[in-house]
Length: 211
Image 1: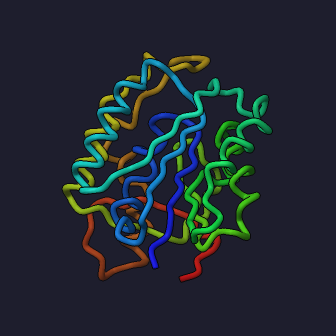
Image 2: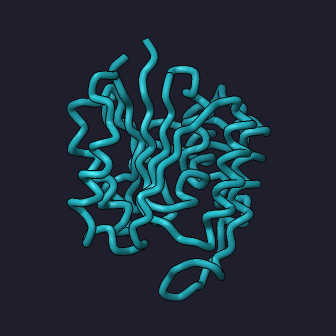
């Protein structure tokens, strides 16, 4: 019996940075795939729309996308409203999995999404958290190898964003335009999983898995 999948993430671009591999690897298990983004940011929205269409076409799937359009960096202010919005989307008559941010993250918006999703932990079949560039002490226990076409999809999507258009305090930094940033987890994986032959990986933490 196929399940529902809910990606519950804070910002436009978080999905491309952290979740494409999971969707690629597990898409056949789900009858409904939902991407729920908590915040809006106009400079990113057209890019994300293009990326979403590209992801659907490349993976031959349909995605139900919802954006609650709360303000970035202020999710703690809207905590109860966001929680209510998200919980009302869940079909509790269906088995479902959640992929969301990790609690070892420095971004307060990410932490809010994690805490809200944790309230549904006992109802989920699988509960997975994602690595993000703002993670700290991320204790990955699941690695997904990315074939070249999926890696190229991921890179193409991320490269469209521009840190100069970010709603940030400094507007300093870059959008992972570096092979090292795209290849998080490779060194560990090559050391500990010697029979794998992927060049690129995404890392996750599985807190619960029931099949």
